[in-house]
Length: 388
Ligand code: FAD
Ligand code: GLY
Image 1 (cartoon, helix red, strand yellow):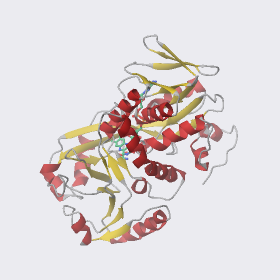
Image 2: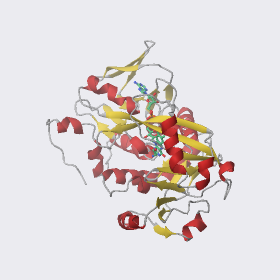
Image 3: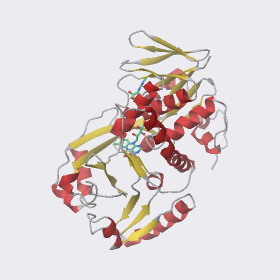
Image 4: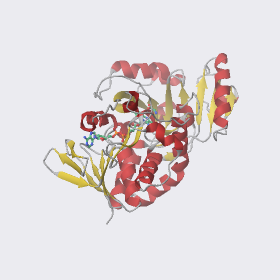
Protein backbone atom coordinates (compact mmCIF):
# COMPACT_ATOMS: atom_id res chain seq x y z
CA UNK A 1 0.00 0.00 0.00
CA UNK A 2 1.31 3.50 -0.80
CA UNK A 3 2.30 5.83 2.01
CA UNK A 4 -0.15 8.48 3.15
CA UNK A 5 1.62 11.80 3.44
CA UNK A 6 0.06 14.69 5.31
CA UNK A 7 0.92 18.18 4.16
CA UNK A 8 0.31 20.97 6.61
CA UNK A 9 -0.53 24.16 4.71
CA UNK A 10 -2.17 24.76 1.33
CA UNK A 11 -0.02 27.57 -0.08
CA UNK A 12 2.04 27.21 -3.24
CA UNK A 13 4.58 25.06 -1.42
CA UNK A 14 2.09 22.65 0.16
CA UNK A 15 0.10 22.27 -3.06
CA UNK A 16 3.23 21.71 -5.18
CA UNK A 17 4.56 19.10 -2.75
CA UNK A 18 1.17 17.36 -2.68
CA UNK A 19 0.87 17.40 -6.47
CA UNK A 20 4.35 15.95 -6.95
CA UNK A 21 3.90 13.24 -4.32
CA UNK A 22 0.52 12.21 -5.70
CA UNK A 23 2.03 12.04 -9.21
CA UNK A 24 4.65 9.63 -7.87
CA UNK A 25 2.09 7.23 -6.41
CA UNK A 26 1.78 8.40 -2.81
CA UNK A 27 -1.53 9.42 -1.25
CA UNK A 28 -1.17 13.12 -0.36
CA UNK A 29 -3.53 14.89 2.04
CA UNK A 30 -3.41 18.68 2.40
CA UNK A 31 -4.68 20.27 5.63
CA UNK A 32 -5.31 24.03 5.43
CA UNK A 33 -6.65 26.19 8.23
CA UNK A 34 -8.19 28.76 5.88
CA UNK A 35 -8.32 28.87 2.07
CA UNK A 36 -5.67 27.32 -0.16
CA UNK A 37 -3.48 30.08 -1.61
CA UNK A 38 -5.15 32.66 0.63
CA UNK A 39 -1.92 33.86 2.24
CA UNK A 40 1.50 34.79 0.77
CA UNK A 41 1.08 32.65 -2.34
CA UNK A 42 -2.00 34.43 -3.65
CA UNK A 43 -0.43 37.83 -2.94
CA UNK A 44 2.79 37.29 -4.89
CA UNK A 45 3.91 39.14 -8.01
CA UNK A 46 4.76 35.78 -9.59
CA UNK A 47 8.26 36.66 -10.79
CA UNK A 48 10.61 33.77 -11.58
CA UNK A 49 13.76 35.78 -11.27
CA UNK A 50 16.75 34.06 -9.63
CA UNK A 51 19.29 36.44 -11.21
CA UNK A 52 17.52 39.68 -10.30
CA UNK A 53 16.57 38.52 -6.80
CA UNK A 54 20.09 37.27 -5.96
CA UNK A 55 22.59 39.97 -6.76
CA UNK A 56 25.42 39.08 -4.38
CA UNK A 57 26.80 35.85 -5.76
CA UNK A 58 26.19 32.21 -6.63
CA UNK A 59 25.55 30.85 -3.15
CA UNK A 60 23.53 27.64 -2.50
CA UNK A 61 20.30 29.63 -2.38
CA UNK A 62 20.92 31.09 -5.84
CA UNK A 63 21.63 27.57 -7.14
CA UNK A 64 18.38 26.31 -5.64
CA UNK A 65 16.52 29.18 -7.33
CA UNK A 66 18.24 28.59 -10.66
CA UNK A 67 17.52 24.86 -10.61
CA UNK A 68 13.87 25.69 -9.97
CA UNK A 69 13.70 28.17 -12.85
CA UNK A 70 15.02 25.42 -15.14
CA UNK A 71 12.30 23.03 -14.02
CA UNK A 72 9.57 25.57 -14.78
CA UNK A 73 8.74 24.98 -18.47
CA UNK A 74 8.11 21.27 -17.89
CA UNK A 75 6.38 21.91 -14.55
CA UNK A 76 3.98 24.40 -16.12
CA UNK A 77 3.20 21.93 -18.87
CA UNK A 78 2.39 19.24 -16.29
CA UNK A 79 0.21 21.50 -14.16
CA UNK A 80 -1.61 22.77 -17.26
CA UNK A 81 -2.22 19.21 -18.43
CA UNK A 82 -3.74 18.14 -15.12
CA UNK A 83 -5.62 21.33 -14.31
CA UNK A 84 -8.72 22.86 -15.84
CA UNK A 85 -7.68 26.36 -14.75
CA UNK A 86 -5.54 28.38 -17.18
CA UNK A 87 -2.82 30.70 -15.91
CA UNK A 88 -0.43 33.19 -17.45
CA UNK A 89 3.24 32.15 -17.80
CA UNK A 90 5.26 34.72 -19.75
CA UNK A 91 8.91 34.51 -20.75
CA UNK A 92 9.43 38.25 -20.66
CA UNK A 93 13.04 38.56 -19.56
CA UNK A 94 13.98 41.30 -17.12
CA UNK A 95 15.84 44.59 -16.92
CA UNK A 96 17.64 45.53 -13.71
CA UNK A 97 17.82 49.33 -13.84
CA UNK A 98 20.56 51.65 -12.62
CA UNK A 99 20.40 55.38 -12.27
CA UNK A 100 24.07 56.30 -11.81
CA UNK A 101 27.12 55.82 -14.04
CA UNK A 102 28.98 54.56 -10.98
CA UNK A 103 26.64 51.55 -10.72
CA UNK A 104 27.78 50.19 -14.06
CA UNK A 105 30.76 48.44 -12.47
CA UNK A 106 28.45 46.56 -10.11
CA UNK A 107 26.30 45.48 -13.07
CA UNK A 108 29.38 44.26 -14.92
CA UNK A 109 30.53 42.26 -11.90
CA UNK A 110 27.13 40.67 -11.54
CA UNK A 111 26.92 39.84 -15.23
CA UNK A 112 30.31 38.14 -15.03
CA UNK A 113 29.31 35.58 -12.40
CA UNK A 114 25.76 35.22 -13.72
CA UNK A 115 27.10 34.33 -17.18
CA UNK A 116 29.02 31.48 -15.59
CA UNK A 117 25.64 30.28 -14.31
CA UNK A 118 23.58 30.22 -17.45
CA UNK A 119 22.67 33.85 -18.04
CA UNK A 120 22.93 35.07 -21.61
CA UNK A 121 22.40 38.59 -20.34
CA UNK A 122 23.96 41.86 -21.43
CA UNK A 123 24.18 45.44 -20.32
CA UNK A 124 21.90 47.70 -22.31
CA UNK A 125 22.43 51.45 -22.25
CA UNK A 126 20.42 54.49 -23.20
CA UNK A 127 19.31 55.25 -25.91
CA UNK A 128 19.01 51.56 -26.95
CA UNK A 129 17.25 50.92 -23.65
CA UNK A 130 14.44 53.32 -24.57
CA UNK A 131 13.92 51.56 -27.88
CA UNK A 132 13.30 48.37 -25.94
CA UNK A 133 11.18 50.08 -23.25
CA UNK A 134 9.75 53.35 -24.60
CA UNK A 135 7.95 54.37 -21.37
CA UNK A 136 11.05 54.06 -19.21
CA UNK A 137 12.10 57.20 -17.33
CA UNK A 138 14.97 59.06 -18.97
CA UNK A 139 16.68 59.11 -15.55
CA UNK A 140 17.65 55.47 -16.12
CA UNK A 141 21.25 55.16 -17.31
CA UNK A 142 21.66 51.46 -18.02
CA UNK A 143 20.17 48.07 -17.26
CA UNK A 144 21.20 44.46 -16.95
CA UNK A 145 19.04 42.49 -19.38
CA UNK A 146 18.41 38.86 -18.37
CA UNK A 147 16.40 37.01 -21.02
CA UNK A 148 16.05 33.80 -18.95
CA UNK A 149 13.69 35.29 -16.36
CA UNK A 150 9.92 34.92 -16.60
CA UNK A 151 6.76 35.47 -14.59
CA UNK A 152 3.34 33.99 -14.02
CA UNK A 153 0.08 35.19 -12.55
CA UNK A 154 0.34 33.82 -9.02
CA UNK A 155 -3.36 33.79 -7.95
CA UNK A 156 -4.32 31.74 -11.03
CA UNK A 157 -1.24 29.52 -10.76
CA UNK A 158 -2.13 28.57 -7.20
CA UNK A 159 -5.76 27.88 -8.18
CA UNK A 160 -4.51 25.74 -11.07
CA UNK A 161 -2.25 23.81 -8.70
CA UNK A 162 -5.14 23.19 -6.32
CA UNK A 163 -7.26 21.97 -9.22
CA UNK A 164 -4.44 19.74 -10.51
CA UNK A 165 -4.11 18.29 -7.00
CA UNK A 166 -7.82 17.51 -6.76
CA UNK A 167 -7.99 16.00 -10.23
CA UNK A 168 -5.03 13.76 -9.50
CA UNK A 169 -6.51 12.45 -6.27
CA UNK A 170 -4.97 14.62 -3.53
CA UNK A 171 -7.34 14.94 -0.56
CA UNK A 172 -7.68 18.60 0.45
CA UNK A 173 -9.32 19.66 3.70
CA UNK A 174 -9.52 23.44 4.03
CA UNK A 175 -11.20 25.96 6.36
CA UNK A 176 -10.10 23.80 9.30
CA UNK A 177 -9.50 26.91 11.50
CA UNK A 178 -6.70 25.24 13.45
CA UNK A 179 -4.55 22.18 12.92
CA UNK A 180 -2.21 20.84 15.61
CA UNK A 181 0.33 18.06 15.57
CA UNK A 182 -1.02 15.57 18.12
CA UNK A 183 1.58 12.85 17.56
CA UNK A 184 4.75 12.68 15.46
CA UNK A 185 7.32 10.35 16.98
CA UNK A 186 5.86 6.89 16.36
CA UNK A 187 3.01 7.82 14.06
CA UNK A 188 1.72 11.02 12.50
CA UNK A 189 -1.58 12.35 13.85
CA UNK A 190 -2.90 15.86 13.27
CA UNK A 191 -6.00 17.24 14.91
CA UNK A 192 -8.30 19.96 13.57
CA UNK A 193 -10.38 22.42 15.62
CA UNK A 194 -13.57 20.42 15.04
CA UNK A 195 -11.93 17.33 16.57
CA UNK A 196 -11.27 15.53 13.29
CA UNK A 197 -8.04 13.51 13.37
CA UNK A 198 -5.84 12.87 10.35
CA UNK A 199 -3.39 9.98 10.43
CA UNK A 200 -0.50 9.49 8.05
CA UNK A 201 2.86 7.83 7.55
CA UNK A 202 4.73 11.10 7.13
CA UNK A 203 4.24 14.82 7.68
CA UNK A 204 5.53 17.67 5.51
CA UNK A 205 5.24 21.06 7.19
CA UNK A 206 4.43 23.73 4.57
CA UNK A 207 2.76 26.34 6.76
CA UNK A 208 4.87 29.30 5.59
CA UNK A 209 5.28 32.06 8.15
CA UNK A 210 3.22 30.02 10.63
CA UNK A 211 5.74 27.17 10.75
CA UNK A 212 7.42 28.89 13.72
CA UNK A 213 4.41 27.78 15.82
CA UNK A 214 5.82 24.25 15.79
CA UNK A 215 9.06 25.12 17.62
CA UNK A 216 7.72 23.87 20.96
CA UNK A 217 6.15 20.77 19.44
CA UNK A 218 9.46 19.66 17.97
CA UNK A 219 11.63 21.17 20.70
CA UNK A 220 13.89 23.10 18.35
CA UNK A 221 14.33 26.70 17.24
CA UNK A 222 12.39 27.56 14.07
CA UNK A 223 13.28 31.19 13.38
CA UNK A 224 10.72 31.94 10.66
CA UNK A 225 9.11 35.40 10.72
CA UNK A 226 6.39 37.10 8.69
CA UNK A 227 7.66 40.03 6.61
CA UNK A 228 4.75 41.91 5.13
CA UNK A 229 4.88 42.86 1.47
CA UNK A 230 2.56 45.65 0.38
CA UNK A 231 1.99 45.81 -3.33
CA UNK A 232 -0.29 47.61 -5.79
CA UNK A 233 -1.44 47.54 -9.40
CA UNK A 234 -2.28 50.20 -12.01
CA UNK A 235 -4.55 49.72 -15.00
CA UNK A 236 -2.33 49.18 -18.04
CA UNK A 237 -4.52 51.25 -20.36
CA UNK A 238 -4.02 54.29 -18.08
CA UNK A 239 -0.24 53.85 -18.19
CA UNK A 240 -0.15 53.49 -21.97
CA UNK A 241 0.15 50.16 -23.67
CA UNK A 242 3.16 49.53 -25.87
CA UNK A 243 2.61 45.90 -26.88
CA UNK A 244 -0.17 43.30 -26.49
CA UNK A 245 -1.89 45.62 -24.00
CA UNK A 246 1.15 45.85 -21.69
CA UNK A 247 2.94 49.10 -20.82
CA UNK A 248 6.30 47.33 -20.49
CA UNK A 249 7.74 44.24 -22.16
CA UNK A 250 10.16 43.15 -19.43
CA UNK A 251 10.00 42.84 -15.68
CA UNK A 252 11.69 45.98 -14.37
CA UNK A 253 13.81 45.67 -11.23
CA UNK A 254 15.74 48.26 -9.27
CA UNK A 255 17.15 48.28 -5.77
CA UNK A 256 13.91 49.98 -4.66
CA UNK A 257 11.27 47.69 -6.14
CA UNK A 258 9.89 46.09 -9.29
CA UNK A 259 7.22 46.50 -11.97
CA UNK A 260 5.68 43.69 -13.96
CA UNK A 261 2.95 43.91 -16.59
CA UNK A 262 0.41 41.10 -16.54
CA UNK A 263 -1.71 39.72 -19.37
CA UNK A 264 -4.83 40.79 -17.45
CA UNK A 265 -3.86 44.42 -18.19
CA UNK A 266 -2.54 45.32 -14.79
CA UNK A 267 0.87 46.76 -14.02
CA UNK A 268 1.92 45.26 -10.69
CA UNK A 269 4.36 47.30 -8.59
CA UNK A 270 5.96 45.94 -5.45
CA UNK A 271 6.74 45.65 -2.74
CA UNK A 272 7.42 46.81 0.80
CA UNK A 273 9.21 44.76 3.45
CA UNK A 274 7.59 45.59 6.79
CA UNK A 275 7.62 44.02 10.20
CA UNK A 276 3.96 44.01 11.23
CA UNK A 277 3.43 40.62 12.86
CA UNK A 278 0.65 38.70 11.15
CA UNK A 279 -1.20 41.86 10.07
CA UNK A 280 -2.01 41.75 6.35
CA UNK A 281 -3.50 45.22 6.07
CA UNK A 282 -2.28 47.81 3.61
CA UNK A 283 -1.09 51.16 4.98
CA UNK A 284 -1.13 54.57 3.31
CA UNK A 285 2.56 54.97 4.13
CA UNK A 286 3.48 51.64 2.56
CA UNK A 287 1.62 52.28 -0.70
CA UNK A 288 2.79 55.90 -0.88
CA UNK A 289 6.39 54.76 -0.64
CA UNK A 290 5.83 52.49 -3.64
CA UNK A 291 4.08 55.26 -5.55
CA UNK A 292 6.89 57.67 -4.72
CA UNK A 293 9.40 55.32 -6.30
CA UNK A 294 7.36 54.16 -9.30
CA UNK A 295 7.54 57.55 -11.00
CA UNK A 296 11.33 57.10 -11.25
CA UNK A 297 10.71 54.05 -13.39
CA UNK A 298 7.79 55.32 -15.50
CA UNK A 299 7.23 59.05 -15.17
CA UNK A 300 3.53 58.82 -15.98
CA UNK A 301 2.91 56.82 -12.80
CA UNK A 302 3.30 60.01 -10.76
CA UNK A 303 -0.19 61.10 -11.83
CA UNK A 304 -1.90 57.73 -11.63
CA UNK A 305 -3.63 56.03 -8.73
CA UNK A 306 -3.40 52.26 -8.30
CA UNK A 307 -6.76 50.53 -8.75
CA UNK A 308 -5.80 47.66 -6.46
CA UNK A 309 -3.56 47.29 -3.41
CA UNK A 310 -2.96 44.30 -1.19
CA UNK A 311 -0.43 42.67 1.12
CA UNK A 312 0.93 39.25 2.04
CA UNK A 313 3.25 37.75 4.62
CA UNK A 314 6.51 36.40 3.26
CA UNK A 315 7.93 33.59 5.37
CA UNK A 316 11.38 34.92 6.20
CA UNK A 317 14.05 32.98 8.09
CA UNK A 318 16.88 34.23 10.26
CA UNK A 319 19.53 33.49 7.63
CA UNK A 320 17.41 33.96 4.50
CA UNK A 321 17.51 30.27 3.55
CA UNK A 322 14.36 28.13 3.57
CA UNK A 323 13.88 25.21 5.95
CA UNK A 324 14.00 22.18 3.73
CA UNK A 325 14.62 18.72 5.05
CA UNK A 326 13.81 16.18 7.72
CA UNK A 327 14.22 16.31 11.47
CA UNK A 328 16.90 14.21 13.09
CA UNK A 329 14.62 13.27 15.92
CA UNK A 330 11.78 12.23 13.61
CA UNK A 331 12.61 11.04 10.12
CA UNK A 332 8.91 11.02 9.28
CA UNK A 333 8.71 14.80 9.63
CA UNK A 334 10.00 17.13 6.92
CA UNK A 335 9.95 20.89 6.63
CA UNK A 336 9.41 22.88 3.45
CA UNK A 337 8.86 26.42 4.71
CA UNK A 338 10.53 29.83 4.87
CA UNK A 339 10.86 30.57 1.14
CA UNK A 340 10.71 34.32 1.82
CA UNK A 341 10.74 36.33 -1.47
CA UNK A 342 10.98 33.34 -3.80
CA UNK A 343 8.37 30.75 -2.89
CA UNK A 344 6.61 30.89 -6.26
CA UNK A 345 9.91 30.46 -8.08
CA UNK A 346 10.95 27.70 -5.70
CA UNK A 347 7.76 25.64 -5.87
CA UNK A 348 8.89 23.04 -8.47
CA UNK A 349 12.31 22.40 -6.92
CA UNK A 350 10.85 22.18 -3.42
CA UNK A 351 8.30 19.62 -4.59
CA UNK A 352 11.02 17.62 -6.36
CA UNK A 353 13.47 17.64 -3.44
CA UNK A 354 10.82 16.64 -0.89
CA UNK A 355 9.63 13.79 -3.12
CA UNK A 356 13.20 12.68 -3.94
CA UNK A 357 14.09 12.53 -0.24
CA UNK A 358 10.96 10.57 0.61
CA UNK A 359 11.80 8.13 -2.19
CA UNK A 360 15.42 7.89 -0.90
CA UNK A 361 16.77 9.34 -4.13
CA UNK A 362 19.90 11.45 -4.42
CA UNK A 363 19.61 15.20 -3.85
CA UNK A 364 22.15 17.92 -4.72
CA UNK A 365 24.90 18.70 -2.20
CA UNK A 366 23.46 22.12 -1.45
CA UNK A 367 20.38 20.46 0.09
CA UNK A 368 22.27 20.11 3.40
CA UNK A 369 22.53 23.91 3.70
CA UNK A 370 18.77 24.19 4.09
CA UNK A 371 18.45 21.69 6.92
CA UNK A 372 15.85 22.77 9.52
CA UNK A 373 18.33 21.49 12.11
CA UNK A 374 20.83 24.24 11.42
CA UNK A 375 19.78 26.50 14.29
CA UNK A 376 19.93 23.58 16.71
CA UNK A 377 23.48 23.10 15.49
CA UNK A 378 24.25 26.76 16.13
CA UNK A 379 23.24 26.06 19.72
CA UNK A 380 26.15 23.61 19.83
CA UNK A 381 24.46 20.22 19.51
CA UNK A 382 26.61 18.99 16.61
CA UNK A 383 28.46 20.19 13.55
CA UNK A 384 27.57 20.13 9.90
CA UNK A 385 29.51 20.68 6.70
CA UNK A 386 28.02 23.54 4.80
CA UNK A 387 28.39 23.06 1.08
CA UNK A 388 29.33 26.07 -0.94
P1 FAD B 1 1.75 30.57 2.27
O1 FAD B 1 1.27 30.90 0.92
O2 FAD B 1 1.69 31.65 3.29
O3 FAD B 1 0.98 29.29 2.73
C1 FAD B 1 1.04 28.77 4.02
C2 FAD B 1 -0.34 28.22 4.33
O4 FAD B 1 -0.30 27.50 5.57
C3 FAD B 1 -1.38 29.32 4.50
O5 FAD B 1 -2.42 29.11 3.57
C4 FAD B 1 -1.85 29.16 5.95
O6 FAD B 1 -3.21 29.44 6.12
C5 FAD B 1 -1.53 27.72 6.21
N1 FAD B 1 -1.36 27.37 7.63
C6 FAD B 1 -0.81 28.09 8.63
N2 FAD B 1 -0.81 27.39 9.78
C7 FAD B 1 -1.36 26.20 9.49
C8 FAD B 1 -1.63 25.03 10.26
N3 FAD B 1 -1.33 24.97 11.56
N4 FAD B 1 -2.20 23.99 9.66
C9 FAD B 1 -2.53 24.02 8.34
N5 FAD B 1 -2.30 25.10 7.56
C10 FAD B 1 -1.72 26.16 8.13
N6 FAD B 1 7.76 34.79 -4.61
C11 FAD B 1 8.25 34.59 -5.86
O7 FAD B 1 8.82 33.55 -6.14
N7 FAD B 1 8.11 35.55 -6.82
C12 FAD B 1 7.49 36.74 -6.56
O8 FAD B 1 7.37 37.58 -7.45
C13 FAD B 1 6.99 36.98 -5.28
N8 FAD B 1 6.39 38.16 -4.99
C14 FAD B 1 5.87 38.36 -3.75
C15 FAD B 1 5.21 39.55 -3.50
C16 FAD B 1 4.61 39.76 -2.26
C17 FAD B 1 3.91 41.05 -1.99
C18 FAD B 1 4.69 38.76 -1.27
C19 FAD B 1 4.02 38.94 0.06
C20 FAD B 1 5.37 37.57 -1.52
C21 FAD B 1 5.98 37.36 -2.74
N9 FAD B 1 6.69 36.20 -3.05
C22 FAD B 1 7.16 35.97 -4.30
C23 FAD B 1 6.97 35.22 -1.99
C24 FAD B 1 5.99 34.06 -2.04
O9 FAD B 1 4.69 34.56 -2.06
C25 FAD B 1 6.18 33.16 -0.81
O10 FAD B 1 7.53 32.79 -0.67
C26 FAD B 1 5.34 31.89 -0.97
O11 FAD B 1 4.01 32.20 -1.27
C27 FAD B 1 5.39 31.04 0.29
O12 FAD B 1 4.53 29.96 0.08
P2 FAD B 1 4.05 29.05 1.28
O13 FAD B 1 3.16 28.04 0.71
O14 FAD B 1 5.24 28.62 2.06
O15 FAD B 1 3.28 30.07 2.25
N1 GLY C 1 9.92 38.51 -4.86
C1 GLY C 1 9.22 39.72 -4.76
C2 GLY C 1 8.75 40.03 -3.41
O1 GLY C 1 8.88 39.23 -2.51
O2 GLY C 1 8.25 41.12 -3.20
